[in-house]
Length: 190
Image (cartoon, rainbow, N blue to C red; front, side, top):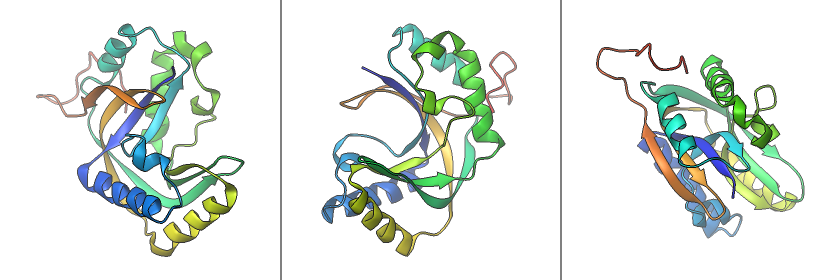
């Protein structure tokens, strides 16, 4: 089963997204995000397989001492196809590029197991609103979301390792500033 490393958001953003997932489910437009057990997130990396629990320990060490950071969502996007994905698109800034690049640098030994779409230079950060619909429903979802969308700011407050499908949350790490500020013994993640 694959493993993903996902950036998690503040409670206000989570509640907003859960409400949208509920609405899409109740209108019969998309059910996966509502029933999967997923949390609102931006996927940082996905691997076909990992050496667990060594991977868990390394991820925990990588993020140790990392602080929460802001992400601004500015638009709605779509990955079209037979299985359409509709998402909120963040502004791709130095923080996002940095955490993705630094994470892949720290986990180079897993490059052959990484999904190419998440590697630096290929990664399109996104927060999934619907997954696995046909194209027509995807367009209906875009119309519905677009009618009320306004840009918003979210705070990345945590990281989770997820084993999927089905979704199983393995380890959640809260990002917080350690006493005394930046810890130079950890990687320069952000």
